[in-house]
Length: 273
Ligand code: PLP
Picture 1 (spheres, helix red, strand yellow):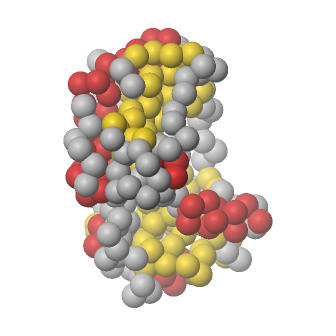
Picture 2: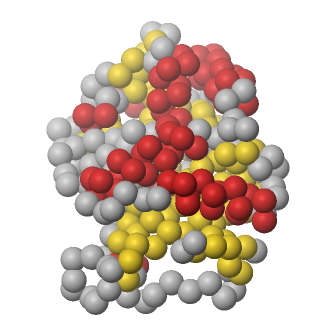
């Protein structure tokens, strides 16, 4: 498999990143996961905008977006797949341990291989840990994902695929790698960005395309919502059929099923050329 590293395509077996890369040693890095259909990336401009926002939030130099675009094209050409994902990673680069930042940023683009279409519904758990809606990293898509890995392990123990966080004031926030929506009396709601959630690209499109409202929601809304669904680049729109001990039989319900249909139709028409 060919990947892009620091300016060109390389064989994955021989590509090298420094052991002193700050992305590895302290998680000083950012990333994007981009869907690709038949070699065409989906919503790449939105992903690159968020990459730049994350870089600025972390104090990294702006990524070279021309290089990242070229890298995405080259990696997709080198790894043809009908439905796949690209992972773009951009780090502070390598430098002495303990220094604020590496001397040369690292830009890495890999294909995550072929992915199958997600199941229509899944189980989720809530976790006792909170997202900090006012942290230094809030809203940035950094490579510091260890908290999510811990939460996801809790989900796996309960045969669930996602763990949902509340924030420090007890409001619903997001999943480890997804945004969350609930249906109340036929209306779709999702926590606002001020809840501390990531500005998910799938979330933004679903809000735009379905008229979902951004609403402060207490965490216990999950116990009474008529329907619940998740959004992310990996899941698109995915219904929830169990949250903790609560079953939601018949998921996807009618409102979620409509959101899934709208998303599938509109996103297919919105692929980059
Ligand atoms: N929230 C978090 C913490 C994420 O990591 C992600 C995606 O990785 C999302 C939400 C969903 O964002 P997107 O729809 O852009 O994939």
